Length: 85
Image (cartoon, rainbow, N blue to C red; front, top):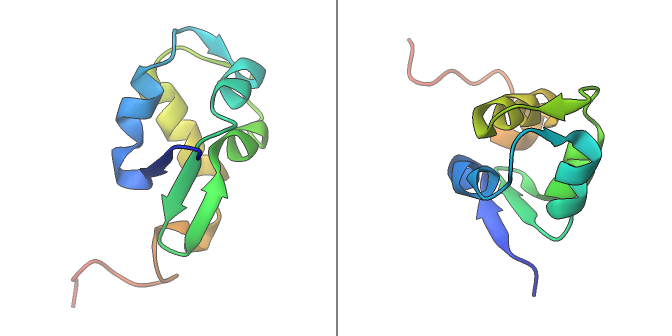
């Protein structure tokens, strides 16, 4: 069974890698991880393969890029505010 991790808990997964790391190596290392999202789940390695970056210097760097390649629906209902109004 492949490991599953919630998007809100991804930091521990990224901290387990050695940095700097290139995109291909990060995607390969995490290709067995299922990322649990608000709208379902995605393969973490496949998401990272979508990155246009060549490498990552830190877990925070990798997490920031992950948010760039996530589908809009991944974090909840589109166009919903977090309590304003």
